[in-house]
Length: 172
Ligand SMILES: Cc1cc2nc3c(=O)[nH]c(=O)nc-3n(C[C@H](O)[C@H](O)[C@H](O)COP(=O)(O)O)c2cc1C
Image (cartoon, rainbow, N blue to C red; front, side):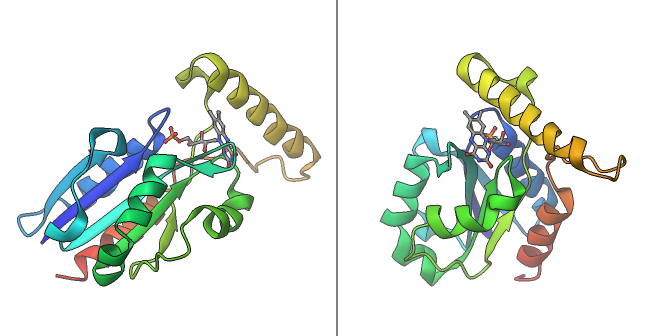
């Protein structure tokens, strides 16, 4: 089975998720190819399964990724396709799915939330400042939280990645 995974990343989190998925699929029966959207990924037609995803920045999904989705909508809807999102604000995932995924894409393997990270140390310039601001605003919410064991900072969610890998393996 030939699997195409395409990701859009800024600080490497979506890339890490795509690599985790790829490692979860690694077997003799599966040939996985991983592409950054910046590196002109191939069309999906040559593949059996296509997984496409990336992060949300300023409320938006990467433009090139959206363009790829729109351009290949027909092929993607005719094959096994999954989408994934990474973001810092888990409570907004449903809104991002509604507002950022082109309406004409109906992925047979659904849309998955792989979590996200808000780590200013991994970023530079304006990204660093924005991540710092996001991190402290998330922490402010935490101060109001009565449960001190609750860590609201976002993380990659490996079980969501494994769930999609299981689903894809189930197609064999
Ligand atoms: C400049 C910037 C803007 C961001 N905007 C949002 C946002 O609007 N909503 C959100 O949920 N997360 C936002 N985030 C958090 C990212 O989605 C999160 O850090 C994600 O893990 C980044 O993945 P990436 O490294 O693959 O780009 C933003 C992060 C940065 C640096």
